[in-house]
Image 1 (cartoon, one colour):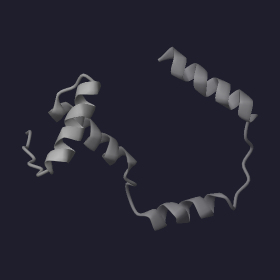
Image 2: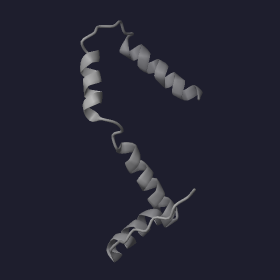
Image 3: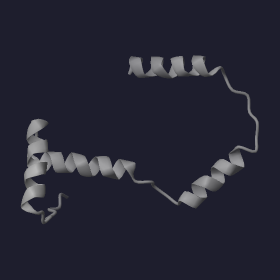
Image 4: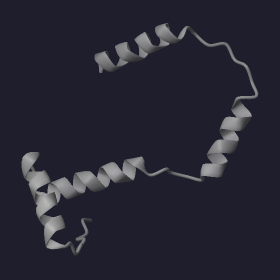
Length: 82
């Protein structure tokens, strides 16, 4: 179900966002939706301390790994085949 969100902006802020949307050839609403989606993706998800504890525990081990250049080439190849 879609929900409506009302945001109060100063005239100057509104005009700036409107110009940005226009330059991207988007409606103001679509530009705002995309900006909010981008902000959500940048927000850390989960407990930061828990994530750091997992990383600290993992670096105590030594596992075999492939050559970095080979791994990067394989990753790039995977992107290209999708």
